[in-house]
Length: 313
Image (cartoon, rainbow, N blue to C red; front, side, top):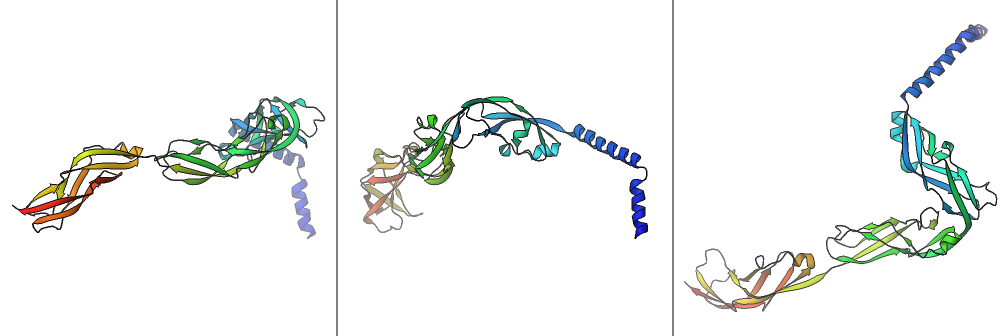
């Protein structure tokens, strides 16, 4: 055992200067290689979060985001998610000042795991403080786009109100908060969707409880109607039937109902009105229903039956 320890000791202690120099050169080489293969990338519009001391809120700040320069390998840079990066400034030691300038430095940047923040712009911003207060306000829903059918009848948030916390001066003039726009483009039926709330103002910080709501969007159809007078009625018979057919009355009035976009597609050339004589073969007079085809829209004939007289040719 002693012999083994002596051997290890000799390996570690012999030529200590040379070993130390080798380690130093290896470390320097590694750092130089890392710098040589590192990339620097500017990530714009990184969220700037300023945390005021208890009982106070940010009334105004000269910038709500910063541009961050990060350094790292190409792989490190590619792994970065800008949405997870933010700059955080603590104002706990600001004393009783209600207005102050603060320095922003790379050490305040969080979420750049694997890479390193090396610069921030701007480096200095102005912040104004106010007493924190709270207020319950209604939620309003905004929609964007156009439904495929009908119109938006209502867009109802649940809950209908939220608790808003922020600077007292801002809350006094804030009457409501809005959801992020709800996209209804191309929709065909009512739906539910959970939506985040928008900040009630620029360059000041508000806390909303809850910070998202469920929105129920209800559509209403725009129903209408079009009428055609004296549309000829044609007979539909079984193939190969050798009879003469007289229809009384020979024309009917047609009313087509449906959504406005459906009605716009219906014209006289597309309208088909016929008496269904299939299954009839015996000479004589029969009462048969009138069928109307008008594409996707609904349609009815007046009268809705006609008298059909069959006679041998």
